[in-house]
Amino acid sequence: MEELSKALKIAFASEFSFYLKAHYFHWNVEGINFQQFHDLFGGIYEEVYGSIDDFAENIRKTGSYTPGSFERFTMLSKIDDETEIPNAETMAQILLEDSDKMAEIFRMVFVISEKYGEHGLSDFIAGRQDAHRKHSWMLRATLK
Ligand SMILES: [Fe+2]
Image 1 (cartoon, rainbow, N blue to C red):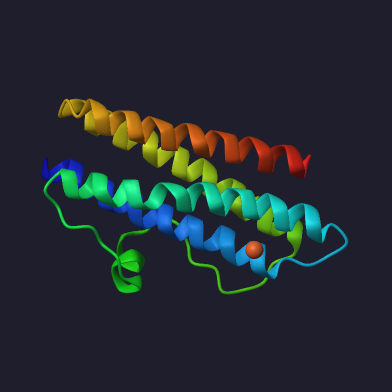
Image 2: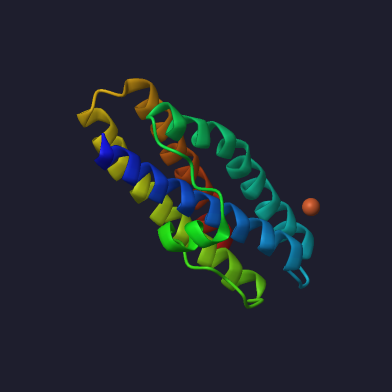
């Protein structure tokens, strides 16, 4: 169960970092296709943010405390922090790579969750994997 809690905290911190980056790009994107990218990043951050509270409470259900500070998120997250303002296409490329990484993290966490027979949790994790598959599809299609 310790293994599952640890994996969940890493996935949670990574998901929060991903959310923050998508929102950061939504705020700061510029260019001739501003509206398109602003809306694309907007749809992504809103979907991911909508999952955060359930995610945190799922960690509490395993008996662990939920991380919720920038310091802990930095320690745990597998998603690199962004401090620059890349151009719009680069923003989409970065988010695509991160979204693929998130789908892969959820794929691994699902296996651990199933190992402990946590089917409800597995269902949530499967939903997150699928959500990132959709975000990746939209980002990839935009970049073609
Ligand atoms: Fe906005």
